[in-house]
Image: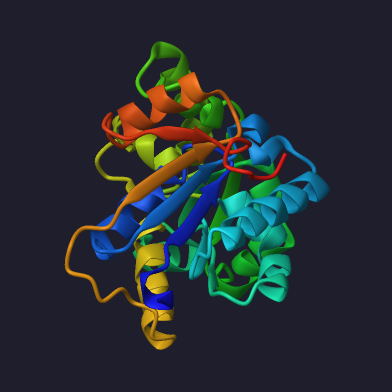
Length: 269
């Protein structure tokens, strides 16, 4: 029965739906449980201890739902808590990190811009990533306060969102960046706006597809791939407002799903 158990995915909010989208494409017959911890979004503005505590609490909830794998669809939570999660849970735990390595192969100007939250950019994991792959290029970190909140509210193309994107992207372009790395799972939903601001000659890298590929690899290696032939199910929970979550998921995923309260599902407080 383990093969037919669900896969658990979580993020600080609805941004991880960009990862869930790629997981669904790669694994159409798997059951998926998605937790949006929107009550604490954005994680990038929380303390490391809060991020770790929330990550453990949600992983414990997912373990209680008998998931066969956990995907940390959040760069900040990956940077702060993934080693702790891997030490505490026996199932495969897959994280996400900014696509710095692919960016070093993509750039021709030798300048890469990384758009992310403050906590992601401040994490030791990100520092190690830059040290490992950024020796021959210039990696410019750009915190983007406010962008997560705009996506959470469904403001993907408003004037206010565009102003925030311009404020984040313009300094990177001024320094010669020809490749932009999306270091937050909320940001792929802003790609049309980022591309419009940055121009067609600037590459934009989203690591979501790589996460789905790695998840499939880990499941296959552990003989955990579903053997069903019918489409898998999607289940959504939030720690925040149900009304806001329903509206956001309807916009970013589909309006034909129900959203449950994390507390009502005996989840972490």
